[in-house]
Length: 299
Image 1 (cartoon, rainbow, N blue to C red):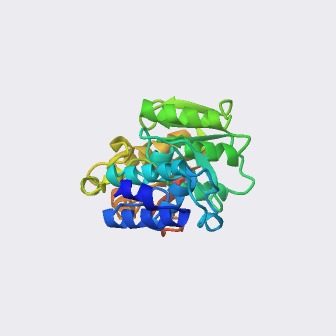
Image 2 (image 1 turned 120 degrees about the vertical axis):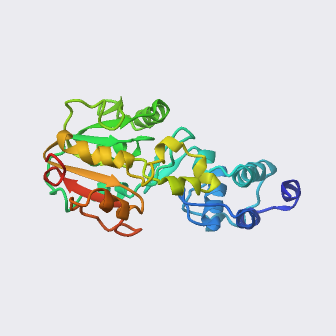
């Protein structure tokens, strides 16, 4: 099929149609930056051709060289045959308009917390709230730590994770953004390696996938490190530790922000006596919860 395509396809439009057909035929799973076969095909083609990722139409009828077509079809074939998420193929992931390096050592960034950071955590933090120290717990690629540093230019940020492999990726991203003087990379199992450190803001996108959901993950999601996804029987293993210990690491008016996928029901069952706030996100009001120090155990 791909040999014949290399002989017969001519234009970007041809390659796009071919890729969408192959992705639909293979019943690929999406969700690592795109939500459907067309958007994924467009992204991979534009990336392969070194074209602006937001400008497909002007190039649709451009004729591809043999080398260009080969680069496009190589990506399409790997995406179908190996079920590799697109960001692992391109070595990049985006949160809004910010690009990060990623590879198989980290999960692909896709956090709703990024939107809250860009909004200054309003209204949960006053516009003039001083953020001197912040923590991205379970940092993975370091993306949220970097967004924190960009949003709060006076703050020092800790980026903590249990995985040495993930921390190596985070360190690369911190270097790429030239933020080594403001972001510290720390190895820590939840708060175990953060003794005595206190923060005005703690954000976390921890492992929260339930055992049942882990067993049913599509092949693309099984490409990601299980340690960054698996949250135990109800998905709350790491979340429980974070909620239990956060107050001891927050300043008097500090704020905790945790992403839990669609697991609001499990969170409320695990913490029936706590009244978390659930901000509205593009996917609904069950993805992220917010709590002040006073609302947390021991606060």
